[in-house]
Length: 318
Image 1 (cartoon, one colour):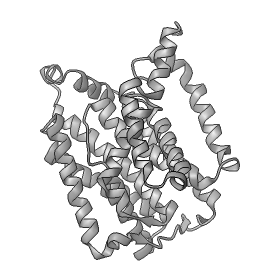
Image 2 (cartoon, one colour):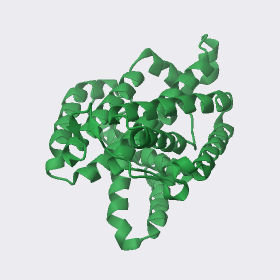
Image 3 (tube, helix red, strand yellow):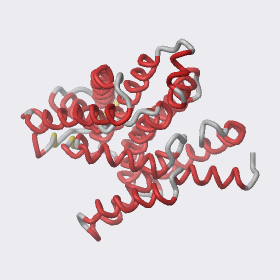
Image 4 (cartoon, helix red, strand yellow):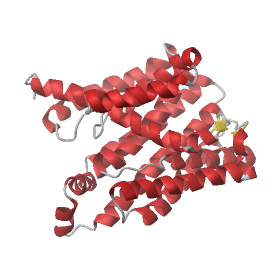
């Protein structure tokens, strides 16, 4: 839901989130858990990206760097150093946050297309590093990452146990994003997005807030990437490639930019389409995704959730 629809959203939030939480708890008994885990990982990735673009107004073309680098760090920690999976996830998240700070310091004082291009260039440097460094496995990726035992007790090789860990990670990340949006920090981000010169005139350190938003978004994207590595027991170049940065833009726009649940909806649609079409059309999946992007921009620019909100407003529900 849109941040601006407070009256409607405030009334619907407890029931809606409660229903979604219950659905999440029972879903693995009805749907293949690995498929659900992929949706949750990419849903969190898209929500993290939406925090930056939808609420801070910063378009990054380099978010794949945080998803992929966190995956590599988590994989190395768990496979090569033998740490427990929760330590690997935390390590990957912190690494992505630090990388986000480096990206932010270099790019945050630029805006618009210049900001986007700087993030893309930095992301490509990370991709090249992952390709050339022997420890990452190069084109083969980091394979054979064990899921291990959560807290040394719970065997994550069990898909059901792994699913509930991923679900818990998603809920924690989503809660952080929700609280950030509905806080004074989120209000300031929204003010910066709407009118940056006015925010500066009110005395806000705009660069500092942008940097904080960028680091938070990067860390949460890393949380998604580290968790994804444990799910598929693999960290690959796909996750750090610029295509992935474009894919998360598509997920966010398709679901609804600047909405709470839109990125999750968009991620669900894209992952489902890729899963269904991969065996049927092969490499044409990329073309189909491109067509969907064009149709989204031309026909329903507010995205799925955004259009539903507009429909509710037109029907007079407030």
